[in-house]
Image (tube, rainbow, N blue to C red; front, side, top):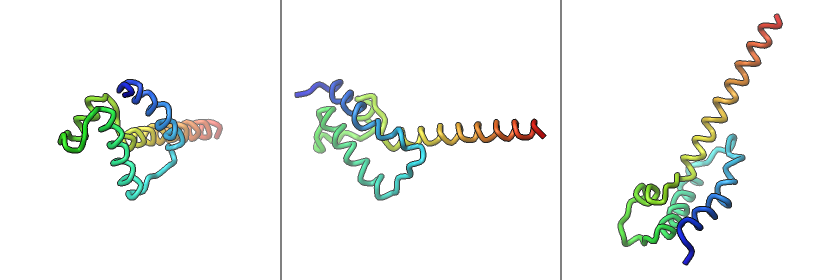
Length: 99
């Protein structure tokens, strides 16, 4: 059996790099509904739980100290949006200073 830490490292190395292009990616509800259970199935197995253990998803995520992909994607998108807004505002200030 592979250790929890090793499985989390593999998850971080393989699954999370997909998010680097997610600044402009929008997930449809259909995609989110398919992604969340698949992700939790992986985390549940990693934590050593089955569906019959009746552990809540939040407890499993807290136990493994990870965030769901949809939350990470949302944070990345917010960060990207604020960065774009700052860049646009800086360009506006430069162009008004030139006038």
